Image (tube, rainbow, N blue to C red):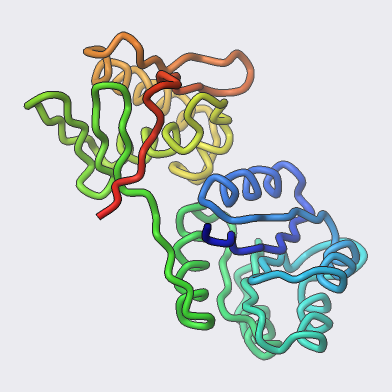
Length: 239
């Protein structure tokens, strides 16, 4: 069994941190969240991590200070900074400390994962194997080609339809939080984007209506849940 990559995630905005942790876990990482730099330092000192994702502006110990202390203990662990500031001085400071990458808020969660995978490949030679094909009852969903197929019929999904269905598949038979979906796909969780997402959910329901065992249910106050038969679980396409 392949060992999950352990991620030290330090983000003082709790709601964003929890969303990031959930998304990283759904992507196959073992992510631990800490809400301040001091707690992050203590966690790093007592355990092993394959990567650190650090917010720059944190209470008790900022991200730059935490990164310097981490570098004193481990010169090789990859570090990615997250910041709401887009100042060149901050970016230069981060790279001087030894950052491997730098991401300015707001950002797509997919972009963070892509950058993490690129850094891990470059620094540690880690090869990630993302799931590219899912079985949904009578349907097959190819995430790379953005095609949903059933019997001899194929539907070419739009990019946002495909991204939303992919997130639902990653959280199959569990709740996909609205905020997580909005910040992952639309980056901003404002009212207009929320209404747009509702429209795409309706479209996906129509695409999946040939199989009555597949449902996308509203979970009041939380988000959506993709229901698939337990005897027909999501499967990875192994070639």
